[in-house]
Image (cartoon, rainbow, N blue to C red):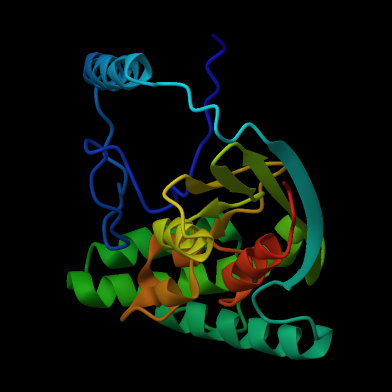
Length: 244
């Protein structure tokens, strides 16, 4: 049998050994030894083998189909060039002010991050998180049109129907809420979102993720490309595709 690996809505799930993503810490991702990672690999492999041996064929639904469409999504800051430029300039002023730098100073990105880490070491954690988040919001919004190829991107949505499985393939890293929303819309436990499919446009938080308290400090929010309603637009487009 040919084993196929598909990555589902994983954006806010990490291996248990990774450690917390914390903006107030200079080293936000704690690594583990090769032996620990091999141990996790063996554990996962054993679980996969057990599940594979328990699979029983269901010939009641043997349909296979696929369909795709493209959805126009605006990046952070919106589609209007002038309004986006004004918002980005405000983000930049706010970021430099957070780092106690004159807003008229020209500063390279690497220097911004160095200053952020140095400042974080001298401040209480909560204040450090807030200041670093203001820097990262500026960098996020500045990078968004670069990743998307413009202020509006035509994002591919692909629906796959394999028997009872209804999959939605997206060129992003969706959070768990996006996957759960798709399963709810399909009314099936066999429904899943497939991540980083047909490209990669960074993270895709759900609108509910953006609405969380202190969401602007969250790693996935700060690593996203599109505005908060992007996930909803993609899910609705997927619902409209008939892959059967």
